Image 1: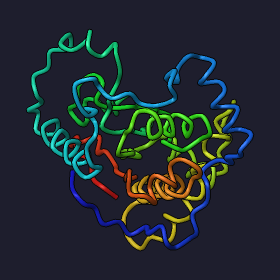
Image 2: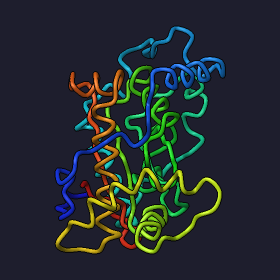
Image 3: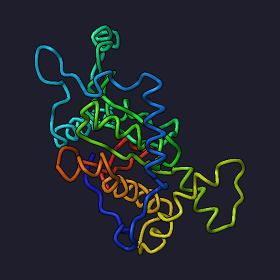
Image 4: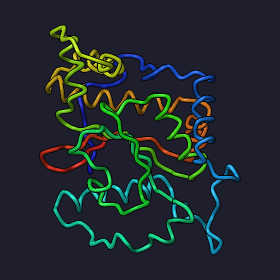
Amino acid sequence: MGERNTTAKSKTQPMTEAAPLTRRSLIRAGAGIALSGWLPASLGAAAPADGPRPNAISAADALKRLKDGNQRYASNQPDEKDFSAGRAARTTGQYPIASILSCSDSRVAPELVFDQGPGDLFVMRVAGNCVSTDLLASLEYGVEFLGIPLIVVLGHTGCGAVDAAIKVMKKDAKLPGHLPELVRAIKPAVIIAEKASSGTLLDNAVAANVRRQVAALKRTNPIIARAYAAKKIDVVGAVYDLATGRVTLV
């Protein structure tokens, strides 16, 4: 999982929110979570009785664990895991080290890609890995109540959602159902990628889309922007290569 230099720089165009996020919509989302019994009764993340929370680590340490795990996965040397071990202990709480906003593509499985075990990752998946109100509420929950130090927006090569946005813009393709709403959030990334002097439009748009979501999250109030400004969390973007299995930061 290494650094990656791309030609489609996000600074070529101001980044905007991937989806309209209003106070009313966030309150509605929070109320839905509370009614489902998802929020802790104390509205806080309880630490284990015998010491600090297992995920009380820095964002840099969490990112290193993901990088090391991806290296093991890509080299086909994953850690041996006993998936039943710790199952009973996990009923008392969860302590993930990272939230992953990933594409829903069936070939991209974050726990496998980063070689992590049960309870290590707090995963949200949607085609095109774009931020929406519901997904934002989940990410906020992870930061505010689970103490997660790192958020990763994970795109991937050959993304069908990004390719669909390109076809809509370039070939006036017509999409059925609610798919037009999905690609609408990706179109700005395609516009950015069109200005690149090298690389394919699809690859550049995938990377630009990831960077847009990262930038949107960093400035999204009240929870994530505040925690990021206070350096309590970090938000990074990455692209998973379907062919090699490697994850590259963008």
